[in-house]
Length: 65
Image (tube, rainbow, N blue to C red; front, side, top):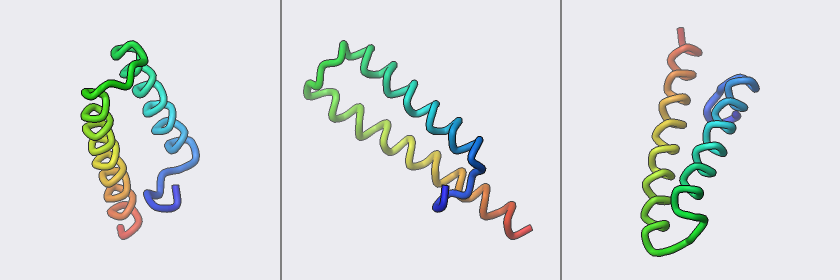
């Protein structure tokens, strides 16, 4: 929240989305941590990081208005 600026409620929604998404991917892979799993974790990490950067940019643009 400190780095990206969402409200407590918005931060909770982002957290819930990430947790549920991670659970879905783990179910998809049958909870196995095989070679492809590392690639998926990298991909989803990059996706999440980009999303957090977008939230931060949105917060920054609203704060400077």
